[in-house]
Each structure stands twice: as structure tokens, then as C-alpha cells.
Image (cartoon, rainbow, N blue to C red; front, side, top):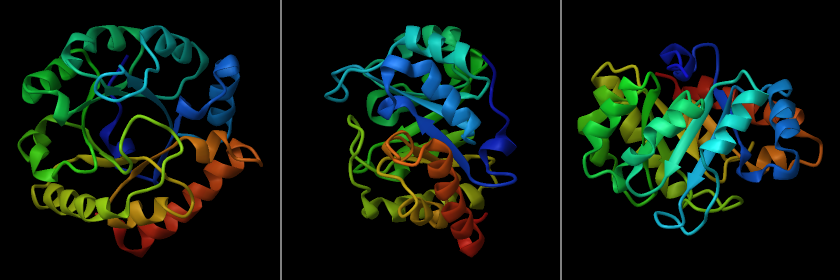
Length: 240
């Protein structure tokens, strides 16, 4: 486990694409992870759901360990769980390089983010679509990234919520005004059509699941299309 370089997360050299294994074929997970690494993904995104904070149940530390053995890419672990502070050490030990916790699930958010930092992992904070961005304003100095959900979390394949774009813009402007090296990550309904909207608003890390793993012409072509459309949007005015 190790913290991810902040310049990398901020998109130095281009927008980052995180392939979410939520849409992968789990019967051949190692092969799927290797395929997206070879196809150009920058990170592997792992959605951890507990059936309480969100309706679904997904992965635990054992799956993170398995993915760690299959790739050299940074592992971006998104905890959609209640009491995330109880699970930080196990996921860090399993190989997480980034851990995101939800502001809605973390009553002692500052303490939880400090605990992630102390484990040698990049601390990140996540926001559901209906949560105002001001909820994370007082912990921006503690994080390497803010993960903005662009769908209601819990399931893969949902439709992008465009009403979240002003939130991304607000965060971009607030982070820039304070001169903080904090990246904005987006997750949910992202593909070659919607990723540019989020990137132009200020995002620099794009999480995609079904758009990559469900692509009929393979993950490499899908990643390339998302990256190209996002890079055009970044040049158009989403830069810092």
C-alpha cells in the first residue's frame, strides 16, 4: 500500500481513467483486471458495498487482495459502508492505494480521513448526488481527492445525473481559490458522451464500469474513446 502521487491524480499529463470492477466478469476477475490494465486504464476502482449504506452487497478485503495480485495499477477503494472507520486497516492491508469514505456515513470525518492518511493510503471523501458540496469544505486540506457520485450509489449501469455538474464546478472553484492540490473524481453513468461534461466542469478522474467492461469492441477501445473525449473537454475549459 502507498499513497498515490497527487500530481498523477490531478491529471498531470491527462485525464485519468479508473476502471470499476463492479461491471467485470467476476468468474474471470484476474483476466478482466489485466485486460483493462493493458488497455490503458490508470486505476482500478473497487466499490465496497455493505447492504446498509447502499442496497447492494459487493466486495471485501479478500477481493482487494486478489486484485492487488493481478495488477500494478493503483487500487482506488470506494467504501459505501456505514462505520467506514472500522474497515480502514483491513482494506489498507489488502492493498488499497486510495480509500474513499462518504461524508454521509462518517460522523467523525476529519478523524477518519486522518486515520487513512496514517495508514499510508491516499485519503478521499465521497459525496452522494443530493449532498451539498459544502459538507466537505472543512476537510479539503485532509484529502487527495473528492469523489462526486454522478448516480445514486449502489448499482452499476445507471444513468448519469446532469444536475450534479454545478457541484463539480463549485468544488473546482473552491479548491482552486484555496490553492489546494485536490483532484475531483466522478463516478456513475460515465462514458464517452457524459465524461466530457464532468471533465469540463472540473473532474480529472473518471470512473467507468459498464462503459468499459460491457463494451462490445473491448476495454482498450472503450478506454481510448472515453479518454479522447474527456481530453478534448479538458482542453476546452475544464482545466485548473
